[in-house]
Image (cartoon, rainbow, N blue to C red):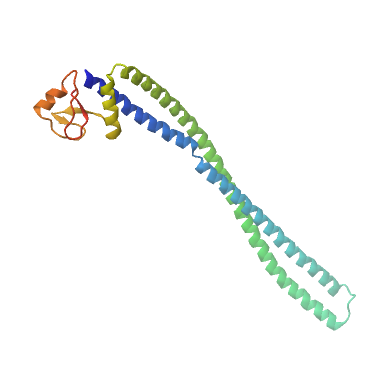
Length: 232
């Protein structure tokens, strides 16, 4: 029965289209490394931020140490006994006090830089841990997707072979009509008939059209959607 054969071809082509979409989606997933790449960029950014924070800490430590050395030299001059002039001693005392106030400021900055470096270290470690997790998850996903892809490709190859064998049994004009309708009707060229109506568009069939659809040799077409009719 010609309509039956075309219905079989339609089922094969529908399954092929579904598999092709699945294959395309799997290939797109396998090609999409955006999440891992973004995590890698986050690690690089966190690493750079950590380097800046450590440099800032080293600078703050050096500045504080420089002030401490100045305080030590000033106090050495103040209490070493070499300076006896009261005015010079008073100036040294004022300088030492000013340096101690400056040291307090520098030590506060050093503490802030230390806390910032610790936060940057934590952020870097968290970014690395997230990257590692994403890489491990990605490997598991790729293994699963590659397995699914191989299965889908095998199924598609089997359908392609079934299709090749089936179309050799079809008249050329019937196959050409089918292909033309499939292109024009969104991939659905053959519509089944249920309860006297076209399943594709829902249009009821006249008794004459229903009898024509049951013909084993000729093709009948829905008068509304123009698809080939197949009565199970």
